[in-house]
Length: 192
Image (tube, rainbow, N blue to C red; front, top):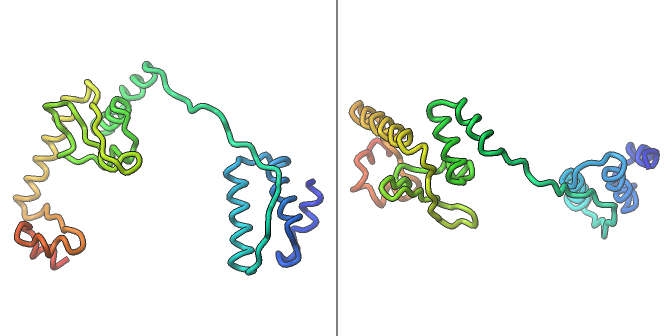
């Protein structure tokens, strides 16, 4: 199969047909043993070339498909997680504890806001979670005090910024105009 691939590498795409595309994709799967996603990306690139650049329809392509991995993801044992988190400090330790203990995805954790944390009920509100739905989860028991310390430090930082005349937040799009009477920093936002 390898020799067949080299025979048409320097040919113009207009001179090649479905047979060469199938041979190339089969070569990727069988000889090169690429992942299914790599082979799929190569197919998508070839189809884009045909449709957009050459304005041709390649037709049905029947190549040997690369197998998708069916491995289970690696999961750390509880002791291993404790060892990793124990080596972290400050905000990084707090983030890792929240990620692992509450089952949040990284982006969900990064989108958390102060008002999403309900300390009294021990709940986290996760906005735009899977399938764009909001849901609630429980934070782990260990970061309770570190989380409160972090929130207090952030509040002090925000109050210091406000005292210095900073800390304004510009509202997006037309919301700034609609809510100008509620926004103490509307004149500042208009200048930016």
